[in-house]
Image (cartoon, rainbow, N blue to C red; front, side, top):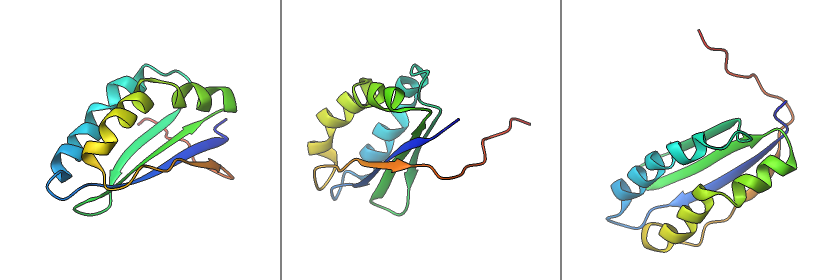
Length: 102
């Protein structure tokens, strides 16, 4: 059961919006290698505002993700792509409807 999550709001630097979007798209294969990351979304709210939302069954899986390849890549690229240092918000999931493949 998915119990924990992370939310990372991101604001792209002026002129870096598409590069930021492509960076987020390119992170998907890295996350797919993480068995403990049950859900991962990279989203765009508007021209320069993005976020990452991911969910986990337990603290061990969440910590593994925070020490994983996506976190390393984000730490390396963030100063070039995003306005402020990113803030990782730790969330508790109260209820969810899991994805059901058709």
